[in-house]
Structure formats: structure tokens, C-alpha cells
Amino acid sequence: MSEHSASKSDIEKVAQFLAEAKRVIILSGAGVSKESGIPTFRDAQTGLWANFNPEELATPEGFLKDPPLVWKWYDHRRKLLEDAQPNPGHYAIVALEKFVPHLIVVTQNIDGLHQKAGSTDVVELHGSIRKFFCFDNAHDAKDVPYGLEEPPLCWCGSQLRPAVVWFGEALPSRLLMRAYAECENSDLLIVVGTSGLVQPAASLPFLGAQHGAKVVEVNPEETPVTDLADVFLKGPSGEVLPLVVAAVEKIRGAEA
Ligand code: BJW
Image 1: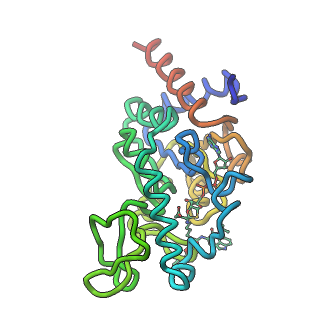
Image 2: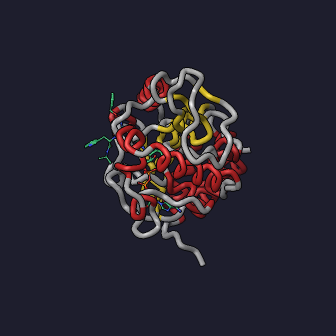
Image 3: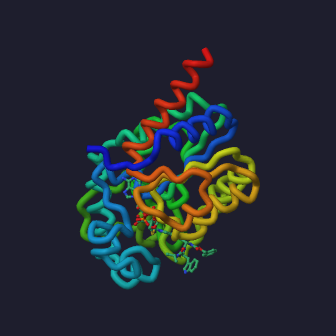
């Protein structure tokens, strides 16, 4: 049974935006990976923050207070993600690349599923759960084994940590600057599966709109982006985005 309530005419409207766009940004959040079996953060009951304390697990202070606790939580999540597969939403985003001259994915997700699906230009604003650096000196580390009870040490003696962005930490400036520049120059932003609550990523749709981009949102729930959006496609991205791809294919077929 279909869970979405996006109308055919709204889907066609978004397909028309895509057919006319030259520069497109997909801004994604945890919701795009939910249909791959990965929990979001803020969904009631199933979200990670409904069951775990973000201050203990996703801040530098939490890491320093109890390094083994934080290490084991990320180790567990990294292991779960190893077997996770992209869903139709991720694949639809890959398919959109062939319809527009320039399309990038700016994601808050650390799961690597956009790349696994085949997206070619992905900006990981909040880092990657598969990478590591040391806490004190940010030296990169490779080939970190699973199953350790505490963070291993870098050659400099500092503890390793996952290369993700915790609360209170700056996002990688080169990536954030690129995301800002892309928003200022895009025709269309498609905001998928994010609650739009975490800064600075949450400001990107507003920046794009200020610079004249159309904004489309895909989400089963309304968010702070919904009022800004030119079109709100209500529903799970794994259902809604393939319909958008089919509608663009129809336009392209009619043009050929
Ligand atoms: C579906 C679906 C389906 C469900 N299909 N959709 C007050 C005001 C403004 C800002 C602040 C403030 N107080 C503190 C701040 C700053 C803070 C912040 O924004 N806090 C807010 C929560 C208030 N931000 C920061 O600290 C950031 N850094 C910063 O500001 O630095 C400043 C600085 C500058 C210079 C020097 C030093 C500092 C860093 C933020 C880092 C966020 N990190 C996390 C954890 C990453 C690692 C990990 O995974 O463990 O990133 S938190 C978590 O939230 C994760 C996510 O990327 C991020 C966003 O969540 P997302 O993706 O939106 O997920 P959800 O769960 O919130 O939403 C899912 C959505 O999907 C929902 O809408 C569902 O409806 C939908 N959905 N099923 C499509 N099938």
C-alpha cells in the first residue's frame, strides 16, 4: 500500500523544475536512509535520540568523559552500516544526475549510502563513520579494526575518534564553503529526509531560496522548510523520488 500523498500534479511540477534546471542540489538527511533500515535521529520512538543521549555520545565533552562508551557506540553503528544497502530513494537521486548538467548531493549522513548507490559528487557535511582521526592533532588513521573496547591510540599518543561532526564542533570549512557556494548558484534545491533543525545545514535551503533557487521538500512530515518550499512532496523518499524520476523520463521522452 502506498504511504505517500504527493499528488501527480505536484510530482509533474517537480519533474518540470528538473527538466529546466541547470544546477541542482540534493540536500539529504537521515530520512533518506530510513528505508535502508537505518534509524533517524529525531523520529519519535525509533529515532536514535529517543533512546540515546546526544550529549553523552555526540559531543567532544561526552567523548572525553567516557571514551570507551562513545567508541563502542560508533563501532556498533559502523558494523550495522557495513551491510546496509541503498534504497530506491538513493538510486532515484543517482538517476537524476543524467537529466541535469550539474547535480551534487550535500548530505548530513555519515553512512556512505549515496556513494554506494552511485552518486558521483557527494559532500559529506557531517563526516563519515568509516573514517577516523586523532582527538588532539587530527591525524588521519586507516584500517581501524572492529570490536575494540576502547579507542586505539594514534602514533602521537592521542586517542582516535570517528571522523564525524559532533555538536559544538565546526563543520569541515572547505565542504561548508562549497555547500554555501553551490546554494548561491543553484536553480533548484531538493531537500530530502531532514528535520531541518541542525545548523548550519538547516540554513542551506533558505540561502538557496534567497539567491533565487526553487525549493522542493520530500518528507513524510512537515518541517521548518515546508513553508519555504515551492512544492512539498509528502511521503517517504524511497516511494516519492522514483515517481519524480519516472515523470522526468516522460518529459524527456516526449521531447525526443
Ligand atoms: C523521512 C523518512 C523517509 C523519516 N523518507 N524522510 C541554537 C540555535 C541554532 C543552533 C544551535 C543552537 N544550539 C546549538 C546549536 C548548534 C548545533 C545545532 O544546530 N543544534 C540544534 C539541534 C539546536 N549545531 C552544531 O553544534 C553544529 N556545529 C556548529 O554549529 O558549530 C559552530 C562552530 C563554529 C566554529 C567553531 C566551533 C563551532 C554541528 C552539528 C553536528 C550534528 N551531528 C549529528 C551527529 C553526527 C554523528 C552521528 O551520526 O552520530 O549529525 S546530530 C544528527 O543530526 C546528525 C544528523 O546529520 C543531524 C541532522 O539530523 P537529520 O538528518 O535531519 O535527521 P532527523 O532525525 O533530525 O530527521 C529525519 C527526517 O527524516 C525527519 O524529518 C523525518 O520526518 C524524515 N523521514 N522517514 C524521507 N522514509
